[in-house]
Length: 175
Image 1 (cartoon, rainbow, N blue to C red):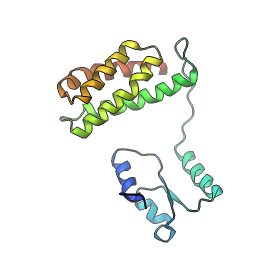
Image 2: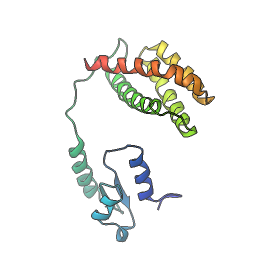
Image 3: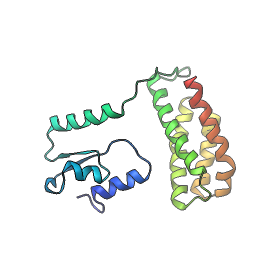
């Protein structure tokens, strides 16, 4: 058991946040687990401790194959930025765009929403600067400050344009 929260509780919270990909339980409490229970508790599978590397590999391979999508051709990075760094930036930008867009759909932002907003704008700020998008990095910095100050007015006024600009960057690569 994890400190303060059980595995099933953790999995439920992860699922409620919208996470759809597989969750595999690693458990020492084998007597309490069996595949039908694991599926009912928001887990896609489980592996008993001590971990048998072959069983873990088998379980992960099964679930990875179920969700795998064909790889898209790698995007062409801006001059001076490596392909790996740019690909990581695009993954992060896509995740942040999705998260911020979801938050802005809410009629009211709770304190937890503001914290999530701040974490996301902070997280993308350096990535934007790294790939040469200084103006957008400055916008992210301003929005991060608004989040830290819980300034809902600035967030509501400026975040939609920031989200739109992030969307354009992500989709320019797909075209």
